[in-house]
Length: 208
Ligand SMILES: C[S@@+](CC[C@H](N)C(=O)[O-])C[C@H]1O[C@@H](n2cnc3c(N)ncnc32)[C@H](O)[C@@H]1O
Image (cartoon, rainbow, N blue to C red):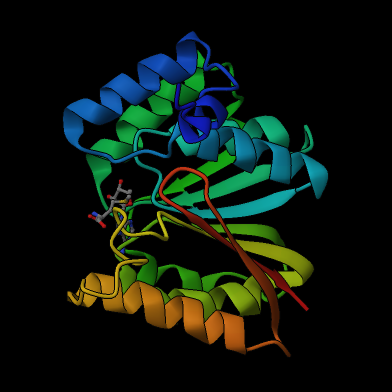
């Protein structure tokens, strides 16, 4: 019998009703939320680094946001950016259902290209990126500026629907992901990085 270790790990932690409901609202509007394994990993990471200030690009239906908020310290705040007003609205509903106080998050409805540059230098413990890969060089540079030393950058869906590891795939999004990964990996004076097989791939980079 072949045991599917990937599915076992993805579903090791079970989502509660608030997350299940948020996920189903997200599926209705095509928000592409994080996988269960990715969500539980983000909660774990936020807890491990005692995250107080986190930036997330790509609120979606709020699934990833709830996981992150549940790992952060209780007084911590999440700044979550999404250019779709509809996504921000359903995320707000999800946060209320999950019992998250409004003081713990700020939802910004704008393209991240117009927002990240306005955030404060070295003020954040964790930055999670989940946007179109073509703009990654901008967001990675901004993430490095706004993270404190020892803060962590996460790029979600780094396998790009499984295409990045396949050299035959050469579309613009896949190439952009490969380039972003290469730049971070080679930039060992600024980042210490690793790529893990959770969800559709998570690139982790800690700011040196
Ligand atoms: C996984 S992303 C969507 C992915 C993207 N549309 C794609 O196909 O690669 C999840 C969320 O990020 C938001 N998003 C994508 N690009 C964005 C950007 N440049 N600025 C702000 N939000 C963005 C989407 O609205 C969505 O709610």
